[in-house]
Length: 292
Image (cartoon, rainbow, N blue to C red; front, top):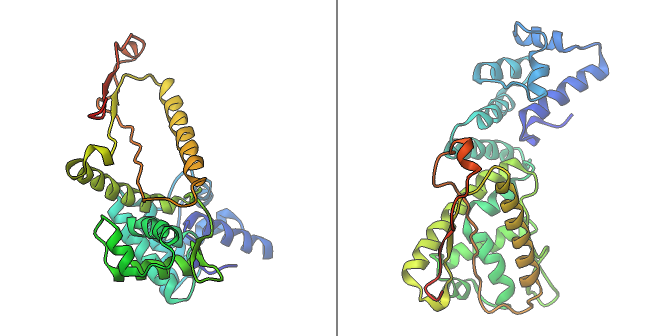
């Protein structure tokens, strides 16, 4: 069975532990719960089925019942603490501690590279600059970027992108992207880093609105009434739009600049009464670019 520090989901570890014990003995969920000190014999099974969750004290009892000690005990408790964290900041702190424990044992958490990539805007921008500016030195890339980044930041990012496999070098020592586009996939832990990236890019968007001429930026918006039925259709349309844009720019071999596209959809009101949702919401209100 894998070490606990190779996991990022405590339920997966508990389930794997149970299956391993079951494979070699007549181990049962009832026995497991009893050893851990839970009154309900089915409690840990319900946890693994996602129907309930462990709390801090339950995490400690379960870790002890599985024979975890020292850093493995701490890591398991951190996994539980991470899932139960109420804010992104608390989740981030827990994940950082998990990364530190696993790295100290030369073990990489699944998805940790993706987490690091999306945690800051620098990696995504440097990844694009590296192939757009062949032969450029870190200080040249930093100078070309309008966002606050130093030559040492670029060097550190390039090192990470190479070691994590986001970039590679060709026979001429030029950078090449291993994949044209990057997706977060189904890794839940990456979502936390994406939240951080979206906040950073949102702040940069506001700065661009105030500092860049209209000819170099595009801002527009739409205030509208939606129904429960139309909302997911709008999301699907936005997803398809993103795919078409990715396809469009992927065909470009020599980009002139690195741009960022933010797509945002959020409620301006609380959910209205059901009867009101079916009424005509009236004309849409469009907030366009200054050129509109």
